Image 1 (cartoon, rainbow, N blue to C red):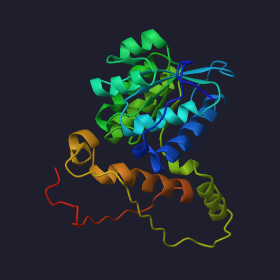
Image 2 (image 1 turned 90 degrees about the horizontal axis):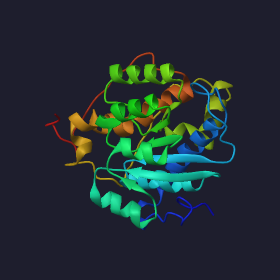
Image 3 (image 1 turned 120 degrees about the vertical axis):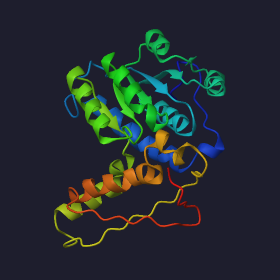
Image 4 (image 1 turned 60 degrees about the vertical axis):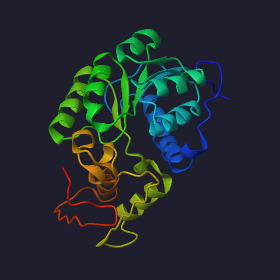
Length: 257
């Protein structure tokens, strides 16, 4: 059994279990494999055959799921959590995980090899760049940033620093979707003319930061829509033409800002 900082295993509350835990495990395990195979994404990695120190930035719902997933990876130490929210830091401390309010303090104290960034999207670019520039590998929740220009700038930072940067596009790492991709590429199901995706989420997005464009970058389109667009690229290789229609559903609003 793996333990947080050598003490005790993180227990995820019941309301965090289910899809968040499973899909976070999928992406974290994929990231763990990347870190142990130099050259797959960007740069090279020191020898981490036996021990990897991970820092967690943001300890909300998805951050707790990442924490559980990291603890299930062989040879991983969840070395520290950084969150400006005092309640989040208390939860981490209760689980025997060192907790910090300041990112620089966490980096200096625990010296992580890699981090998971699990904060709202508007902070992703700055946090990821700071970690990359300190020589830290970065797994960042989607969306990578809230606009294309800043995302491209961040990839440039990763290339310049020689560190790995991976976006948590978790569904492409689900084995069944990998098989679907192979079937499509081998032509075993014929020419695909229609592909439909429906997402259902237990997380209420109305009246939270998800619906604030300055924080999320685009509401449900950039949140769950990220997965839809990523799967189109993963399964079919890209998009030739795009047409969109936004309607008012039972939870929709014409007052999008």
